[in-house]
Length: 226
Image (cartoon, rainbow, N blue to C red):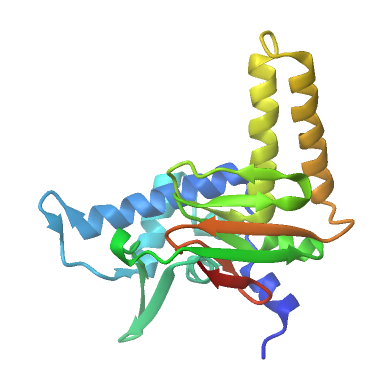
C-alpha cells in the first residue's frame, strides 16, 4: 500500500488557478484538433507525449523546455500522471496519452464523493469538477455551483478562485448591493480563507449527476453511487 503523504507529494500541482486553466484549455484544444474533425472523430486515439509537450510549450509562450518544466514542477509526462481522466501507454519506446471522453448521458451514474480535509496536504489533491458537478462545504453551508465547464485544479485553487469570485462580485456591485448582503458575502470570504489554514477538519463534497468528477489521489475519498 502506498504512503498517502508521498502520493500527495507526487500528485501536487503547484500552479496558479489562471495558469492551470490556461494550460488545460490549450491541452484540450490540441486534443480536440487531432481527434475530432469536421466530419466527426478522426480515428486518432493516442497522442505522443513528447510532441504535444513541445506544441504546448510553444503555444503557451514558454521560452524553452527548462522554463516549461519549471512551471510544471517536472516533465510533462509526469504532469499528465497527476491529472484525472488521462491515461498513458508506451509503444516501441515512445509514450502516448489519451484523454478519456465523458460518457454519454445514458451511461451517467450519479455519485457523491466526500473527502475530509484533515491537513494542508489534502488541499493539494487534484479535483476534476465536471461541468455538471457542484461542491458542497457543509461546515459553511457553502456551495460552488455547476457552471457547465470542466475544472481541474487543486482543492486549494478551487477555494481561492471562489474567494476571488465572491470578492470581485461584491466590488463590482457594491453600489447597488444592500450593505448587509455585502457583509454576509465578505464574512463567507473570511471563513473560506480560514478553511485554507485547516485549523480543524472540514468536508469537501462533490455532487455529480454524471459521476465523472474525480479527486486524485483517491485514498480517503468516500464514493457513493446514488
